[in-house]
Length: 343
Image 1 (tube, one colour):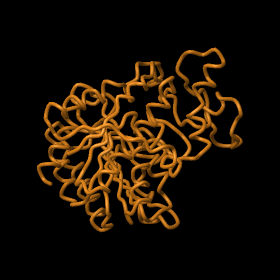
Image 2: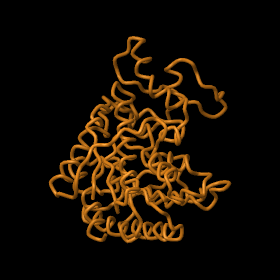
Image 3: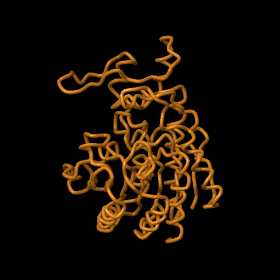
């Protein structure tokens, strides 16, 4: 399986995030992608290529132009005030506050963010545009006839919605790739999110559409981040009613229960009969992940890859979460190897 990778991911290297009430070193850091790349190379899973530039047009097909413009200029505006440290919001536009976009960069940071765990840095813009190009280059290869491709996307993307960032995510790489596949000939695209945390951003982007099926297996939002989306009764709206499936599981859910949810998701994908499948590949379902609470072990990711291959659909993997850094490479490579063995 081909892997698409860019060294530009290292430019996003936040100093700290606010978690559990304290500032801590970011769980999402460059070592994650480095460990994955090392394991992919060691196991000789396929060629590794650099992305080609696609410009902003495919990103603007998914994200609000004002939001994109904010991300493009925010660091320059932030540092113009004499600040040489990462930017984090200090409040949010919530219930009964006026929904107006401030002029000041600090106000816009608050407006366009959903949490204070996603530091905007000097390297954010080049890193996130490179990650989008990685995903789009993977989509290119599916359209060229490849059976599958792995987009080693970092920063991750599935928490980024049309017009806000959060959960370490700025641009929604999987959504950008899925929209590009639609724009270039695929009539139906399915997105399956297997990260521990609900892909709230992806759901937001496609919630009213019937041409993109979204499915997510994740920790129950009653107790798990991102808390405010991911419930089982969220089925889509308008033309998208019936094209959104959430499979929330309680913290600590067993491996067998997780795979039952996967089988249910694959059944819906089979009914949808997509031309392509995009997998938001989070491996923070691993039993040793420091911020997640499922029980999958490394061999279970081989099974996951094999089950995904059984769908028989051209498949693009986009890396999402996974914060147990030492085994992240093994766990991701196990998914790809399991897929390869079944293909």
